[in-house]
Every structure is written in structure tokens, then in C-alpha cells.
Image 1: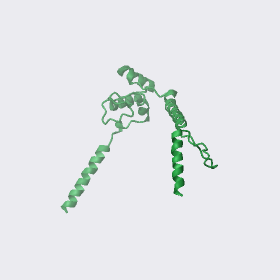
Image 2: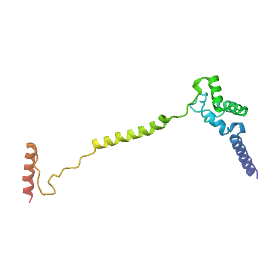
Image 3: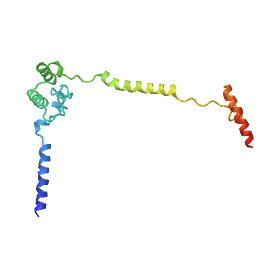
Image 4: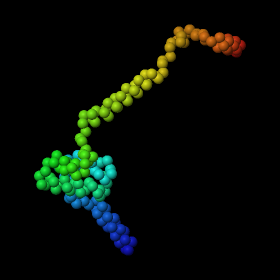
Length: 163
């Protein structure tokens, strides 16, 4: 019985720790409006993510910034006014511009360029098909090199003696 009780207590402890680790308050779960504005601001904790997508646990910048964005939105400030307030406080380096058409085209253009280079490489180094050497017609092709011709004559003599 004590063994079952210890197992139950350890299971209960593990369950409690898991629930505590996964628990979040409402302020830590930003709504859609906060995330929309947070996507336009770079997190200043040292990561390269936006305020909305910072993956650092208990980030020293992202969490207070989300709370500040929520406060500013509750007062009635627009998205642009909030972004301008952050730029005024932290400098222009905090602003993340949305990707433009150039940012969307470059990966596809590079992939197409890579395919063209691969195709040109394959065409250049593709083995050429063997020309008809007369084997199908029964025509014997003579070697062009005199040294090879000498060896061919020797082979013919040796094979003639085998019969």
C-alpha cells in the first residue's frame, strides 16, 4: 500500500508541475489586435523576432511591450500612433516594415535561377550517345593508331590459332 501511495503522490506532483508550467495569465496571451501591432515592432531582448513572436521565456522586453500596447489600445490609440510612440521611445531600429513585393519575389527568382543553372550543367556534361560504330551492320571499325593496329593483328593471329 505505501508503494501505491508514493506512486500516486509522485504522479500528482508531476501533474501539478506540468499544469503550473503550462498555465498562463490572460495578460500573457495577447489578443489579435496586440499581435497585429507587435508584428510591426522588433523585440529588443537580443533575438531577431518581433514583439508578437518573441520565443524567449519571460522576455524582459516583449511582455511589458505587449501590456503597453494593450493599454494604448484600450485608451483608443490607433496602430500607427502606437508604433510611432515605440519609435519615439526606442528609436527607428524597433520598426519592422512589412515585407514588400521584392521580399516575396526574391526566393522564387533564386529558385528559378538555380534550376536553370542545374539544367545547363546537365546539358553540358550529359554523356553523348555512342555513334553507330557499324556493329549493327557487321562493319568492322579499324583503329586509327598504328600501335593499336599492330596489337589488333597480333590478336587476330592468336585467335586464328585457337580454332
